[in-house]
Image (cartoon, rainbow, N blue to C red):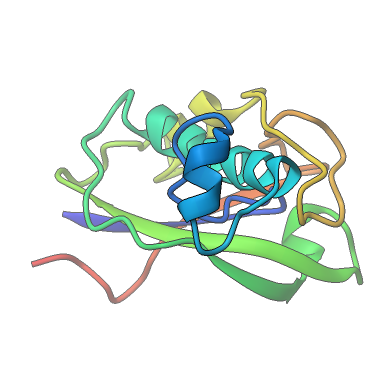
Length: 152
């Protein structure tokens, strides 16, 4: 079993908001009271769910971590010398080399994620496309095997 980490420039905050705005629900919620806040939280959750659903096309991911906002130097994303926000989470898969394509251990996952539509304009800072872009020059998602964290 292997662990994979994903970092993206899209806001994939896990909010657990799984339905559209309902005033009755919003009144009882401790964080999202207005329709605008609720809709933003739903869109953040939708972005996270989209990534998990694409991963699930080839695998049954488990041990999925809660996405964490991080500040990074974004040279991995093709924006040399830019510092800004990204979101990171990791997950485990049941089989080794499940996403391997040639020499790239995550090559198939990169292909699956390329051009998947996402929702921009949430808490993200630099988005070059409203879709996930996995090519090396303008990518807005970075995927790699998490080293030294094999799942037992």
